[in-house]
Length: 328
Image 1 (cartoon, rainbow, N blue to C red):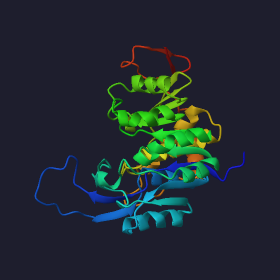
Image 2: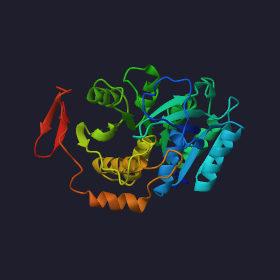
Image 3: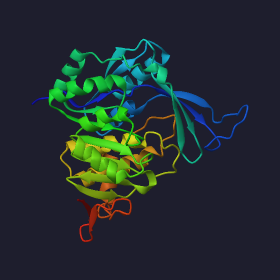
């Protein structure tokens, strides 16, 4: 089948206002003097995934709702300047926006304006069908319009991925995304037992691969009932902002996966891209390129897989020779 698009990204378009703070949590005070300043720039989860995929040479199309406002203009300009196809559906409530408090160590606290997205928001069925028919794969951000689009994407017969971000493994809002996708990303941040949650996603849904990112601890990859720990990669420069690291990980993983690479190598790509993203200042939207990613992956070959500690999961057997954890 001939397609025009490698990855159709749905949702996650918006702007962030970056506020540098002295540390997190921020102590209460009547006021703070902010340096180097406060700046609004385009780029939320879907934007970052689209940027990452495009930088790696994949044909990418982004579909979401945008307002007829200054913030929407910033998002449209970002896509135009980076050569990313964008289909923007009018959003009467205005473009989605957030405030990111960024500490000197690169940690961030994000405050999302939930009024910019309504449960009644829908992506037009005809548009979703047409774009899906021209795509190899769809990456779906966990917004209400995208939830409505999930059945249409499944009917199109293309593979799906999603990022559940800091899901706690319980909130029912995330379940339709988790169970509909062939490839699921999530963070371990709010999970009491990451291994159990990964297994439940794979057992209850369609996912052939589940990846849980764990920051400096690396990532955990569940593929074909085998759990592997992929260690973190040393950032190539000082860490200045962790925002977007998960989106970079997903983009690089998809780059390898769509090219037929082994899932463990895909996860290595993700770790390299995520580490690179942490070195990008919060007011910029730079992504790692294909040549740099492949070069750094070649440099680190031979150190990509380690045995995972399974103290939190009594239903796993370690193969000491292969360095893998067999889920039983």
